[in-house]
Length: 171
Image (cartoon, rainbow, N blue to C red; front, top):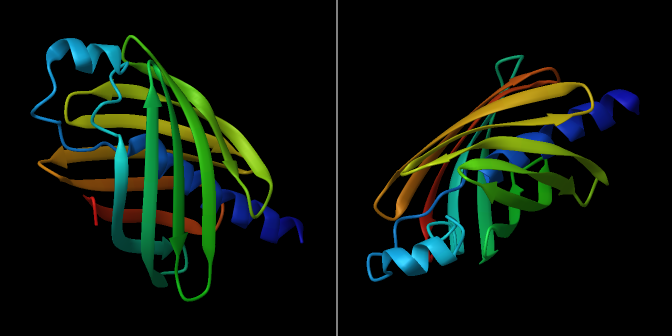
């Protein structure tokens, strides 16, 4: 059971990393003042959906189907990410605070009742971050182009080696 919890915690933390890294397309109609008032999270807001691949350390891969929702208020953003494969899934709720381009927050995977810290850096069209959890750590890289984004996660610990997801806003 401990092994299942640690492995499940990795999945939750990997998904938290995804959330940390999810960045949307710039809202072209917004002014610089409106973007500043949104605490730097204006690119994140809205609903996203897509698919990806979860790679296990033993070489197996699984397809993921994901949906995400983001609500920003000033320098704080709440996120929810739900991903499913044929054999597993996770449901994460996260809160992030932007402090001058530095991100800090917490992830909670609700189905497994596990949590951990998030940290990273927010840049224009990119994000780098990390998540910690019981028995694992994971790093993330995100690239945004238009209304599409790609997310890449690499983990140390657990049975998951990598996660790769492509999302589109508003589908």
